[in-house]
Amino acid sequence: MAKLWGGRFTKATNQLVEEETASIGFDQKLMEQDIKGSIAHATMLSKQEIISEEDAEQIINGLHAVKAKISSGDYAYNVQNEDIHMNIEAFLIEEIGPVGGKLHTGRSRNDQVATDMHLYLVEHTHAIIELVEATQTAILNQADKHIDTLIPGYTHLQRAQPVSFAHHLLAYFWMLERDKGRLQDSVKRANLSPLGAGALAGTTFPIDRHFVASELGFDGVYENSMDAVSDRDFIVEFMAASSLMLTHISRLSEELIIWSSQEFQFIELDDSFCTGSSIMPQKKNPDVPELLRAKTGRVLGNLVGLLTVLKGLPLAYNKDMQEDKEGMFDTVETVEASLLMLAPMIDTMQVKTDNMKQAVNEDFSNATDIADYLVTKGLPFREAHEVIGKIVLYAINHKKFLLDLTMEEYKEHHTLFEDDIFDVLKPEQVVANRTSYGGTGQEQVKKQLQIAKSHLS
Image (cartoon, rainbow, N blue to C red):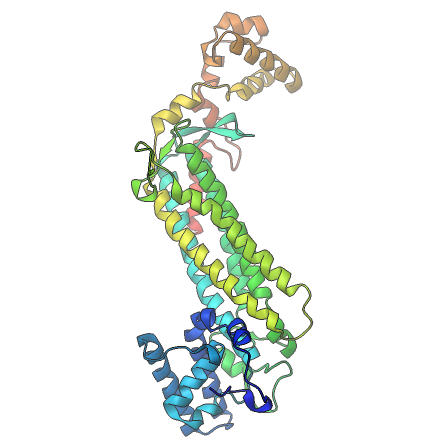
């Protein structure tokens, strides 16, 4: 089969080279964007009287026919046509004859593929933002039900202070809110049109790049033709935002795994998001959060891979940049699949409130409140800290918790203790007393919930 670019060559492409350099195996995902861009380009060529209205109409109708036949399986991609652009052009010529060859006037595959990727990524970024909001909604649904549910808060994976479970969950809401903001911000730079930049230097034809950009829904055009065809910042930025978001999802997944373990028993994941063991019939494995935890490495690897490809490239287009697509597609598909599983998994998880309540009553996470109590009585914090450290050691040695100690035992450590210490030490009161803005006190959590909901309205 003759190449559409083969006029200058005297030998056929080596078969191995043909197979390795062809991208149709993966860039066929850009079929709809490629045809959309071609229709806008043909419309502009006619408007600018570069081709006739009749030719443009024939080309546009032909492109619609090609899209329908590809979708129905009537046209099969050919590796000898290398990529999605050449395959579609070959189908178009087969569909309408030589006039199909006029479509490529005033453009190059370099600006064509860049346009396709901009269109694809903007479309999928908007879809991912919707999935992020669905996950945030699932978090809010659980948080709404558990403002008064208490859970041990941890630092260094050691019990630190009791917190509202809603407060703990909302921390992930705000992580996702920042992720959403980064994705929204990335669209500003992704939603630019490179079409009309040609191979690298523009074109001699009187094209109207701004018209094409408007037709395709872009906010504007690249100001520099060399930058237009060589820029992949918009993909890197999307991958970076995705890597950070998957890192946040991985952290949440780790907590879901820990909380659902036999040692914690704070939650139980719905059966539909777990699997069993082939040998141990009692097992219920949290495979979905484990898989989500692992996906972070995959997405981060795609980011590092693309940065490595780009780091030494001179302007403008180089064949190395063919390696930008598979990582982009994989990142999009991984992020979308992860969010599609995460939201319903959070929505359907069972929270074991009794186990959480037992946990906060059987530790020393209320110790800081004794120190604060002594400070309100006039003792400097550093002195109070030492007093409480000794009380905790005393309680451990006597196999007691702080609420189990008697007033006499407290008095032995300091004379400032009064009967009201026992009210201060109740986990419910420990949480309620955290009234500072953004704290875990129930009233503050309710305010935080209202603010969080306003970000989704």
